[in-house]
Image (cartoon, rainbow, N blue to C red; front, top):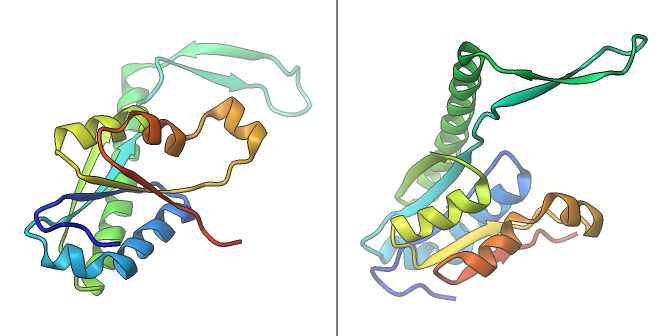
Length: 167
C-alpha cells in the first residue's frame, strides 16, 4: 500500500494499546511514502470534554445511592487541565516514536467526543487517509458504547484504514 506524494495521513491515537499498534503499522508499512511526502504524518488525539454534571457514588458499606452533582467551574477547569496534560504527553510519546523511525510528524489535539472530533479533523486538515486501531470491544460493548472506528468508517470524508492487532 502506497500513499501518493503530497497526500496527508492521519493516525488517531488514545491511551489504548491498539492505537499505538496502528501507529507502528503505519511506520512499518507506509514509512517510505510518508517520508517521501511533503506532508508530515499527522497524529491526532481527542481530549474528552468534561461533562456538565458528574455522578458520585456512596462508598461500599453505606447506602448505594447515586446522585448527580453539578460540577463547579474550578472542578471542570482542573479536569480539562489534567486531560490536556495527559493528551500532550501521549502525543509527545507518539511523536518521539515517529522520530525514532525517521518520520516527521505533527501533533494535533482537540476537545470533544472522539468520533466527531476525528471526523471534523479529517475535514479541517484535509486528510487523505485516516488510520485507526481496532479496540475489539466485542458485540455487547460495541452495541452500548459504540465504535469510534465504525463511526469514522461511515462518516469521515476520506478512506479509513482500521488496523486490527493480531490475536
